[in-house]
Length: 299
Image (cartoon, rainbow, N blue to C red; front, top):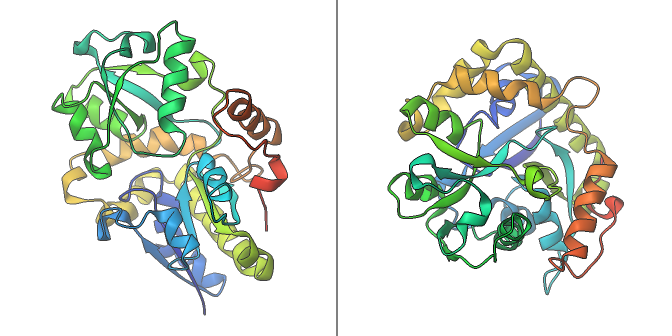
């Protein structure tokens, strides 16, 4: 058995169901793979998932597409590449409590945003506010990542960035009404998130290994589309105790259609990626003008 390890970008949720399905149903074993799935819960992000790939702690990690650029433009660059996306559409949004009265991004001026401290995140939010007619002047806090959602609920922050298929469903289940601002609605041609990140040299040297991992993973995610109830039964034991009250089946049924199908699972459209890369460069968020081929690699 060949060993492969992947670090998730968050505690297990319906973004990740396919990995656990592939593990439980033996899809990885069929490919001769022994797969270890790590989560940030083990160290509370002491080392980020992407960093774990850079330092060789894991083979793969989940991260936003823009993290690939970030690692490639560090003082000591790392050859990170995106191998596959989990979603064919952007399921994330900037959200506020409806009771806050913040009804559009421009109203975030002079308010508090809880950030994950990702490389481009704060500037993306700032540009979103400006695109809506605001000044882009707001305060930013950097809470513990796994507690960011709570800062919104307890009003320690006025806005943050969430996945609508997870925190959005959590809010709906709890009767918490949100105002939701999707990036595409405010002139931000966002890329893909999360993507499966790898070390380019490792992928080149072991292309069959990574291809086998992706094939088994694809099988796991497509199973979720056909069998959402059975899929969440496999996910549930891995969900944190804090989030066990969330309606997993509701979240899974919301999520599954966005995984794609047998023809496009994992694929990142060149035009969409290029549009996002161009946008980052044209808005001075990134000094290097990246090409699609530098960022995306299919083993």
